[in-house]
Length: 93
Image 1: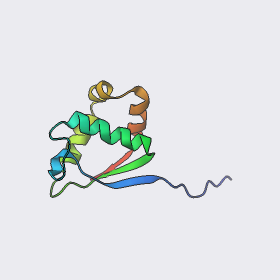
Image 2: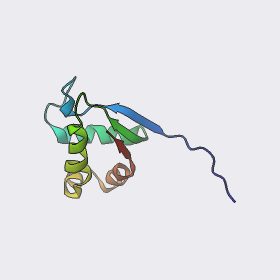
Image 3: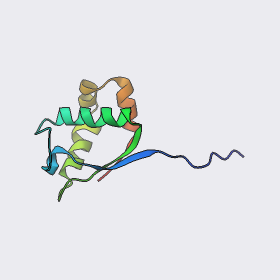
């Protein structure tokens, strides 16, 4: 029997979306926001992302439905290698 032991990963559990309305440098440009979010996560080896908008989960829902569940949208914004990484992440509201 082989025992792997503990595995350490980076999680970022305090991310705001444009729906948060606080310190939003992206306005309503969700494509720019999503590209920045995921490319930063890839560059920093993040494996889990927590969306912590104030008083709403609308940003979390939009991220899931309009991007993560829409392969055409992802293909228009990211390379296949980036999409592969994005699909492996864990997302939390």
